[in-house]
Length: 113
Length: 111
Image (tube, rainbow over all chains, first blue to last red; front, side):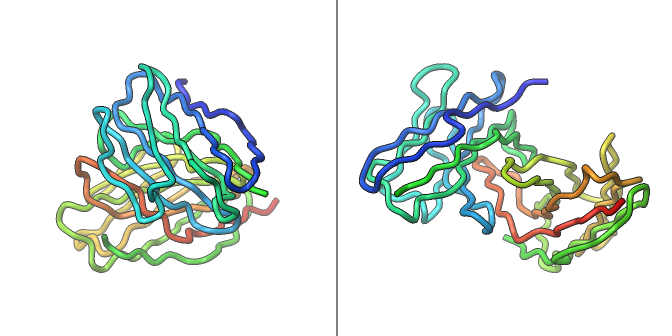
C-alpha cells in the first residue's frame, strides 16, 4: 500500500537556524498539506498546496514558512529562522482529490533549542 | 466551519462494539463528516467519510441521521490496538480542503 514518507524523523536545531522538512507524497496524489502538532495539543493545519501554488494557509504559516515542490516527487516545508515555539511534530499529508480523505506521513519531530 | 462536540474519553473492553457520537448542530448543506484515528506519535489516519445515512467499510461504520446534526462512528469488536484518539471533522469539500481537528475522543480498550 502506498505511503507518505517524511524525512528526517527527528530534527534538532538551534533557535534562529533554518530547517527543511521533506515529504514524499503518494505518487498519484495532487493535493498536498502540512500540519503540525505541538506536544499534547491539537493537530493544526498549516498550508495546502495544489498545482504548484499555495491554496490556503493558516495564521501560523507566516513569512518564516515556505513550501515547495522542487521536483515531481518531493514536497518540502522550510522554516527560515526557527523559534522555540516551532518545536512540534510536523505532518505532511496528501490526497488524490480535495476531500477529507487525506493520507498522513509519520511526521518529523522538530526540536528547537 | 461547523463546530463539533464529542466525548473527551471512552473506555471499552476487547471484543465489544464501540460507538462514538459527535454533535455538529450547525452543519452546512455542503459539509461532509470525516473521522480520523491517531495513535501516539503518529500521523492521523483516515477511517471513514460520509454525507448522509450509513457508510460502511472494512474498519468501521458511520451512521448519520436525516437531520445530519450528529454522527456516530461504530467500531465493531474492538481490540487493544484500537486504543487511540478518534476525531470527528466536519467541513465542505472545496478546492483547498483543510482538516480542522478538535480535541477528539480518547478511546481506551481494556483486556
